[in-house]
Image (tube, rainbow, N blue to C red):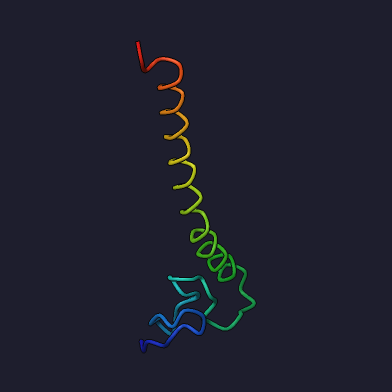
Length: 75
C-alpha cells in the first residue's frame, strides 16, 4: 500500500483511498459502483459538517451566556 501525494493539499495518502482525509479531494479514479461514490460523498460531507457543528455549539453557548447576563445574571 504505497503512499502518494494529494494533488490538492500535498498530504501523504494511501493509493487505495477514495479521497484525501485532509481536504476531501477524490484520489481513486471514478468507478461505476454507487457505494464507492456514496462513501466519497460521505467523506466530503463529514469534512464540511464538523466545522458547522462547532460553529453551532459555540454560537449557542454565546447566545445562552448573553441571555443569562442580560436577563438574570446580575441580581
